[in-house]
Amino acid sequence: MKRHFFSAALTSGALLSAAMFSAPAMAQEQKFITIGTGGQTGVYYVVGQSVCRMVNRVKEANIKCNAPSTGGSVANVNGLKSGELDMGVVQSDVAYRAYNGEDNFDQPFEELRSVFAMHGEPLTILARADAGIESFDDLKGKRVNVGNPGSGQRATMEVLMDAKGWSMDDYSLASELTAAEMASALADNNIDAMAYVVGHPNGSIQEATTTVESNLVPITGEEVDKLVEEYPYYTKSTISGGLYKGNDEDTETFGVAATLLTDANTNADVVYTTVKAVFDNFDRFKRLHPAFSTLEPEQMVSEGLTAPLHEGAERYYKERGWIE
Ligand code: GLU
Image (cartoon, rainbow, N blue to C red; front, side, top):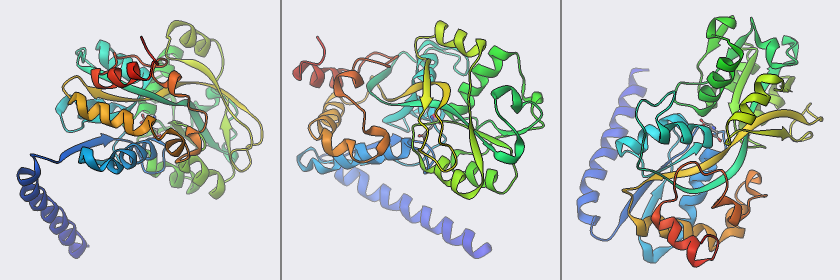
């Protein structure tokens, strides 16, 4: 144990000094960008890795892009605010609240900017078959993973619970495991159900459904209808049957869009290069994850965006004639 800790400390120390040596020497020509994602078994991680892969291929731009795993949407907004991240993948509902300073966010984040929208993300509840959970209301009294505090699922769960007048005490256990931890917790019978706002198919739900008999839970009813009616960023959504073992029927729920965001202070040429790298090679980009297969560029730059476009992105979209 001790030895393990020592080697981890050594590694991060080595990385730190490598960064200290290389950054000033290369700052002139090379630019570094960091994109915040989510857990490694989700789709955000692949979004970040895929965008970076496209950007890093543009040799003459000399941008070094990396996309580490993070706590999710809320953590990514906070990373943009603090300057730790240059871009981040964020749910459209979280982006809206961050920009306007609502709920989790005390102050409007006026510098928040959109780059483009990505795939749809339904609120997804997966329950162990032996827990007998057939609807959202059946979660009462159960052990439910409501998500780590920096995650988008935690934020969206809180919105729905609020609408229903629920508190965390309505569950026998409200656990806060991260996205990467919850599939094994479900399989190990440490929780009865997990909540995830995520594109499909994804590694986490795949892992859970192949290791334990489990069912996707429909999320419908008057509170959901009201949320969809009231907020433009919530839409009814369906998780197609047949994507996961033991889940052959469609599941009705509601959801948001994943969006790539940045800050108004991010260099416009860097943002321009990023969107150009993605959209000039869009067929290649789309093949990097099955959840990207239905993406359409013109929709991605005009729908689901709750913060204004960054000027670097806008420049490219105008050139392509996608926006006025
Ligand atoms: N929507 C989740 C969040 O905001 C992340 C989903 C994913 O990683 O694909 O935390």
